[in-house]
View 1 (spheres, rainbow, N blue to C red):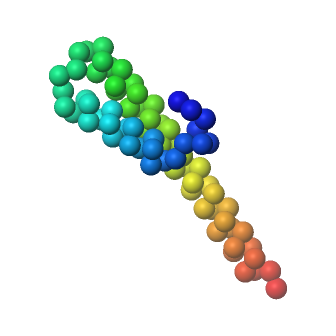
View 2 (cartoon, rainbow, N blue to C red; view 1 turned 90 degrees about the vertical axis):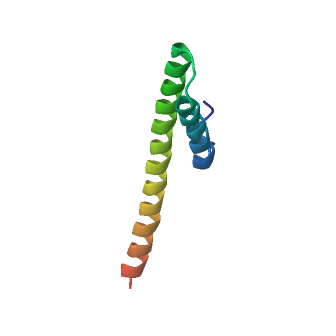
Length: 72
């Protein structure tokens, strides 16, 4: 994977969808299916991390806005 701070959620999610599609289509040799599963799990964790970071950024903006509103 490339630097996680540079990757867009949408790009990582598209790669996750592709891994899932390959698994759902079936017909993969066992080793390839396991590799696709491992890739999918890693991508799912990466998506989760990106979403958590986005949530933290939103919370900081919201908290900053709330503090600005409380200041007379």
